[in-house]
Each structure stands twice: as C-alpha cells, then as structure tokens.
Image (cartoon, rainbow, N blue to C red):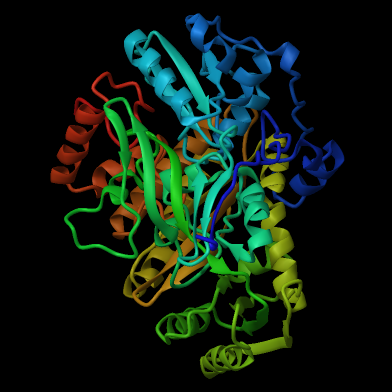
Length: 542
C-alpha cells in the first residue's frame, strides 16, 4: 500500500565509543577537571588514574577459533575484545582503568543479518562457546560480562551492524526495526516520515533498540508510557531452538504474551533481531516549567498529586535538595520539580498551567516563566540546567572514578505509602554501609525519574572518597547494602537498569520461586546447551 514503506538503506556507522568508560572518548574529562571534581568531595585526594592504552593491556589468550565459513564475521583484535569485556558500571570502569581485562571475550562477532546470528549460535552451541549478546555495551549491572568460567570459550555478539529501519506502516503508525539500531540512528531514519519512537533513556546515544527491549528500559516519558514495553508491538527472536516471531497486534488476550517472555530476558533466552515498534507523530507543541519547594516532603506530595491527576506530563523529575544542588539547579536546601508537556496535535499551555497549579497547591513556587514553542524549544533555565547535568553525569562519574571516588547509583520503585520510610532508610542504612566501607562521610542524593499513580521510581546517587586499589570491594559492599535495604522495604531491585549479574542477589529474593522454576524450564527448552548469557537472571540448573 502507498502508506507502507520498505526501507533498505544502511544505517549510519556507529559513533566511536570509549573502550574503558562512558560514551564519546572525546568527552572524557581531562586530568585537571577530574582533580577539580574530586576536590568537591570531602576526603578525596590524589591524582587521576592514567587511562591505559590498548597496546599495554594483557588480555587472556584466545581459546577458540570460528570455522572458516564464519571467519568474516568474527574478530580477535585486542581493541574489539577490550571494548566488549565490560559494561559501564562503576566497577567496570575501575577494572578497565586498572588494566584488569581477565573477563575479555575470546572473540567478538559482528553479524550483518539474521542468518549470521543463526549460524553463529549453531556453531557456539556445538562448540560449548558462551554467547553474550551486545548492543552498545551501556549496561551498568554486569549484563554483558561473562563470569561463569565453565565454557570452552566466550563470544561477544555485537548487533550494531543490524541497525536499519526495515519497514514503516504509516497507517498503523509503526515500524519494523532491526535490534542493533542505536538511538540517534533509529530516530534519523524515522524523521523523514514525520515519526518518532520517542524513547530517550540517558544512554540514548550509546544504546540500541535490542538493548532497550532486552532490559525493559525506561525512557523519555515520566508518566504513562514509561518503559519500552509500552511501545512494543511484536518481537522476532533467534533462539538455539528456533526463531520466535510474535504477531503484530494492537492488543490481545490470547494467553500469556510471547513478547513478555523476551522483554527483560537480557539475552539469556534468545537474541532479539527485530521488533515492530509503535510510533508517534513528532511533537510540535511543548511547554515546561520548574517549581521550587522549601520542604522535600511537600514536593513528594505534589508529585503524587500530579501522578494521580490523569494529566500525564512527559517530564516529571523531582530533585531532592542534594540532587538539585549537585546539578546546579537550586541551592539553599530547596527541592525542584521539573515539569514538561508535549503534543503533536494540540497546544499544551493549559495542561502545563494545571500541573503548575497542583504543585503550587502543595507549597511549590514556580520559577522563571514557562515556555511553549515548537520542536526546537528548550524549557526554562532550571530545566535546561538539569538536562545538561543529566547528560554530563556519566562522564563526571568516570572522572570521579579516575580519582578513586566511589560513585554508585541505584534506581527502584515503591508505593507512595512506603517512600518516606525508604528514603530515610537509604540515607541511614546505606549511608552507614558506605561509611563502614570507606571510613569517610557520604553524599546521598535522590531524584524521581518516573512516577505512577501508585508510586514513584526514586533514583539514588551515592558519592564517597575511596581508596585506590580497593574501589571495587567498596562498591560491592555498597551495592549489597543497597540491595538489602530495597528488599527490606519491599522496593524493586531495579526499575529500568535490568538485573544483569550485579542485581542477581536482590532479584533472587524478589522473584517468586514458582516463576523461577518457569524461567529455568524456558531456558532449558530454548537454550539446552546453556550458552546464552549464562548467569544473568538465574542459574539454569538451580
């Protein structure tokens, strides 16, 4: 039909990515700026850890070789192996900085089409080679690091060569997209059609559609369509047992959803190769405002009123006093609520005014003037300051890591009635664990990334000076304390960063045991050789 388009052009080449840290290597902080940042952390001192060169790294020997028919898809180059060893968690960055690449994969595969994925899995299953699906490596939970040590070899399967928008159904407003599409490349292919997926996680420039699907990523919208699940119409997944392709439908009550089995499965049940995604017309009406609160509990009550109002703001970020100060948005112990609304069809000034009025009713004071304009508009100065800090945060984390400053983040979700106690417990109990691990004072901040009628999704940041050479052990102790505290207060171990390997202990306690039995049975049926991302979510044998 005229409104259905098949696309065959190649996606843009993926941008250069740092092998040791976050994102664009050209955006990494210089030594002097690392030292300036560390000076803001009481007790931190020293010089910036040098960044090792690829040539200086001692990689483990390659143990396996691909058959001749697959050799053109596979690389054993040290740069490829180093760049695919870890994700981007603090412990990953620190180990890379110290030159610890013991977990490096033997080979890295770069499939160009689904047939390549099938052939690579067939070889790996027959050769006892573990396969670690890899989108763009932005995992912060150990999702792309092999730790099992029981296979004959390890293959990292990089899907970035499969990044095309294959088909657009303009009538149904959806598109069939390959899983390796990076965020900016995906949007660039949709833009000429006036469409957008509008899923913008912090990792947008350095993560892929397949990664978002496999980890049930949270995105742009703070309310309503918060996760990639809400935008997914159908999946195509390659498993060692065969290819699973679900039927594209607006909704269905036909038994358990096959898509729900693979969404969030983190590459342990199959490799997502394509997905039909629900799109939107590009927004042309936008408005934003920021509201300041003298009391954080009042700000929380305001956000709850917003979440339960049915007004569904696209942006509803609440920054507690520490987070507001750290981001340069506000000081003086004040909290800041950043609100944003948008539409492709209708002016949004009225809806923003209603949201601001709700915040004012709970003691908030709007700052500056709200803005409303076209697609290129930016919100008020506080919102822009927050956005700039938000995008810069991963590079700042890397700079602090080079100064041996511990920086941990963990996100969760809980019901509104439990949040005040959880907030206090994190500051009290996780704070005590940090002081015990580091012997120093700790800074703990919080922001809401997403909100629901029945509860918020708080995102905590922990910063404390560490000791060079002991950073990973300290981080591990803090992570364990955070998982324990979340479990004690019936909050999820992760809202949108996935489970991976770092959250496994907390997930094992949170997950109902009958569901664990079902997952292991699915693993045995779909991946009988146990090669797909072993150790993620569950252990196949128990």
